[in-house]
Structure formats: C-alpha cells, structure tokens
Length: 113
Length: 112
Image (cartoon, rainbow over all chains, first blue to last red):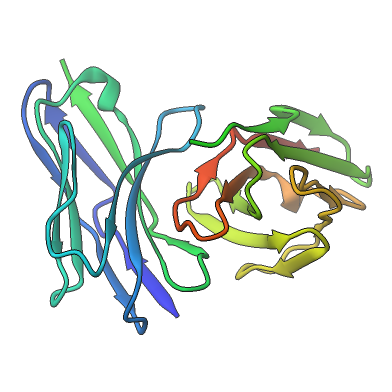
C-alpha cells in the first residue's frame, strides 16, 4: 500500500519568487514513480513533473524541479520565477507496479502580483 | 501526451435518474481509470481497467459501474443518482508499460 502526505493546505508566493511545495510518501515497493500534477481552477489536471525512484538525479522541467530524498521518503517541488499562471492546486502522487495512482490531499498555491 | 475526452463537462440531474459519463481516448492506451474528486479536492480511484473486458473496483467504494468494450472507450454509469453522488469525476489513461496517467477535463455532476 502507498500513502502520500501533503501537510500544507495552502501556500502563497510573490510573482518572480521561488516556492517549495512539500510532500512525503510511504511505500513498500522497491520500484515506484512519483509525480506532481497541477489542477488550475475548473481546468484539466496536467502533469508537471515525474521522478523514477531508481534514478538518483532530481528531475527538472524548465522552472520546475524536485528534491527527491529517497531515504527520507520526501519529494518536494520547487517552482522558480513564479508566474501568475502557476496559481493552481498541486497534487503529489505515487504509483507502484500496479500503476494505480495514490494522491495527496493537494495544496492550493496562490501567486501574488 | 494523450488526447482524452469527457462528456458532458457539467451535468445537473434529479435524484433517481440513470446517467452515463463518457470517457474516450485516441492514443490507444490500454489502461484507463476513473477518479472521484470530492469538494475538498481529494482524489480517489473508483474504477480501473487494464484492457478490453477488464474492469476492477478501485480503492474507494462506489455505486457506479463501468464497462470496457472498446479500447478507446470507458464509460461510467450510475443506475440511480443520489445527492451523495455529487462530485467531480475524472477519467485518465496510460500506456501499457507507462506509469504516467493523462487526465481528461472532468465531469462535474450535481444531483438535486
């Protein structure tokens, strides 16, 4: 079984600044994947970034990067140069061999102009 | 990335009605999923399918049913809708050997 915990319900960041969203997980599987998804208000859930657990190198996608600490079971998302369009609900999720996603409760990110 | 479609986007119906939420994808993905997203925004897996004629119940118990007669189509049916079914329903799909799921736009269901 897998669990994903996002303990911060909401965060705020100033436009152009950097923000880090926290996530911890627990799994009994040796091979698993971790994801961050973004869900803007009334819009489609989209993939932000993914990390394969067997890879030591942290994934990056343009302004988005992760800090994957496998021993600590931590998977935080860093958003650099925050933009107004980054305002959304962000979900951390994990999946194992059965490919079923387990989601955290999500965090609402607001961006102040 | 998958093209995945859901209809209707919004639905308001009365108690006791039978409804079907449609989900289709054009990428030939074998795996498809239905999630229920409650007002607190938490997502729960309610059904999944790994291919034609394969359907399984997810982690959250649901009174809905699903079918998978064609690879591209994964409809969800409620035989008798109730106010407790009011929620957003998200459909997703993934490649046979892929772990990344791609989501449709969702159907927001309101049962009066």
